[in-house]
Structure formats: structure tokens, C-alpha cells
Image 1 (cartoon, rainbow, N blue to C red):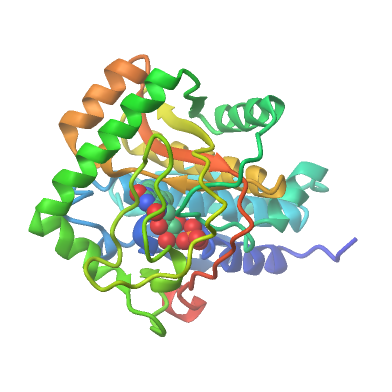
Image 2: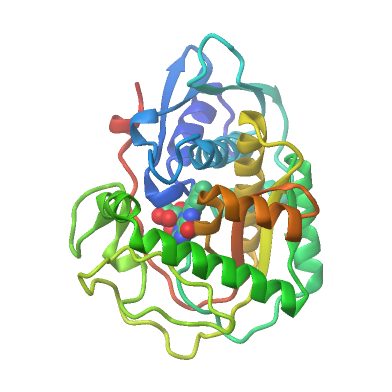
Length: 324
Ligand SMILES: Cc1cc2nc3c(=O)[nH]c(=O)nc-3n(C[C@H](O)[C@H](O)[C@H](O)COP(=O)(O)O)c2cc1C
């Protein structure tokens, strides 16, 4: 057993928080440590003004960072004391987190902690390996613990509708210069040394269509960037949505916490996620999705879950950039 100290727990939490997923790898957060408390702040200079004007995806990303920090702190033997949106006068302050009661981490928490740096977003089809229902059920229970719902979309007709909505959204965004310019701003050329944005090494050069097809974002635009895809991996996987009852800042943070719990747990079972959130960035399509496929709950993330033997490295900003 490692030696407990609040300082170690704080260091572990800020180091771990960096590895959370974020829209376009914007890493829209900063951390400040005062005494034994970490302040997690939203960095709105990293918000996507066109596709995420309300800051929904920004707060989902920050929620994912918050869950990551809590998990790291638990692995150091402290139950985190978290306050979400603690100060109405400081809307950028997403949460404060401090090492609370001393508590040995349970096995699941340790497993989740072990996946923080290993988990990666996938951007192609999956290997033809079925996912056990039991795993999907336990991922859904995990999402619920964080205040959101993970629903697998099982009916083939519903999967087709969701794929069609994604295709429509992708088509609309590809034609709109404002969306394209925003995407290009966060796309990195091969060999780039930038520590944010989506690197050319993180997606296949040729889009890999699944049946039905969930199009990938065109990070490479017209450049032909990307790597060779694994030709045998063409399965769609299990399509799932993360939803919340309400649609305010607290729910977005909860969706982010649930997302990261799901992703780390899935990763521990060799399961990766591919995201397709284009339709959620267009109000009409998001509302349609809410009414038709989400039983009136608000869709926050759309993903496919599956097995891949592909693995990519995606950079993160160094702590010196993030720590205030
Ligand atoms: C709110 C949110 C939306 C995202 N939407 C997409 C998406 O539509 N397509 C995609 O390929 N990745 C999407 N991602 C994944 C990010 O691009 C990814 O987390 C980031 O590039 C960091 O890479 P990593 O997850 O491999 O560490 C999304 C992530 C978040 C948190």
C-alpha cells in the first residue's frame, strides 16, 4: 500500500485531470491549487464558438476532467470532497475538490484509475467481437451513479435513424465555412508538436464506413492526413447515447462525469468508444433526437462502443500550461 498524504493526492489529481477526453482535444480547463483545495475552472478561451456556443461540450469535457481527478484522489486513499458550481458569482469555477475522508480505494476504482492514461478515442469501425450485455448494463449503472443515463440503441431501425441524423449533420457542417474553419483550427498536421487539438495520427486517412455509416468528422479537411486504417475492423459496435433529464450547466457536468466513468470502465474491458456528436451541435437535429430516440431526455453524447486493436497517442498540455 502506498503512503497516504493529501499533497500526493492533490498532485495525482491534477496530473490525472489532464488526460480526460475533451471536444476536439481543446482541453478547456485550468486548475489552481490553494492549500488543500483544487479549483477546476472552465477556460472559455478554448470554447468552440460556432459548434458549442452555449458551452455544453466545454462543460461535458470539464465534467470528464472532474471525474478523472476524483478517481485519482480515491486511488491515493482519499474520498474527494467535491463542490460543483460552488459560487454563483464565479460561473467559470466548475468545481472545487479536496481530499476528504481517508478511505482505501475499492477494486473498481483502482481499475478505473489504471485506465486514465490508457483510454483513447477511436475513429473507425470495430473488430467483429460482440460486447457482453452484462458489460453494457454495468456501464449504464455507472452512468446513473453520476447523474446521467447511458442507453444502448438496440433496434436496427433506431440505429439507422441515428446514423442518418449524423450523416445529415456532417453534411450541413461540411458545407458551412464557419464549422469547417473551427474544425481546422483544432486539427494538427502530421508531426505537429502542438499539445492540443486532434493530431493527424489519431484518425484514418480514408474514412472507414460501417453499416449503417456513422461519419467521422473531417479533421484532415482536404489535406489527406491520417494513418492507415485496420481493414478488418468494420463493425459498428454498440451504439449508445448519454442523456440527462435537464439541460443546464449542472447536467452537462454530470454528463461529463458519467461519460468518463463509462469510458474508463469500458477501457478496462478492452472496449473503446468512437464519438459522433455532430447532430448534437445543430439545435433542430438535437431536439428531434431528444423527442424521437431519447424518451424526452436531453442527448449529451452519441457514441459507438466496441473492440479495436488499434491504439493511438494523443497529446496533452503540460501541467505548467494548465496550472494557474
Ligand atoms: C463533448 C465531446 C464531444 C466529442 N465529439 C467527438 C466527435 O464528434 N468525433 C470524434 O472523433 N471525437 C469526439 N470527441 C473525442 C475527442 O476528440 C477526444 O477526446 C480528444 O481528441 C482527446 O483524445 P483522446 O480521447 O483519445 O484522449 C468528443 C469528446 C468530447 C468530450
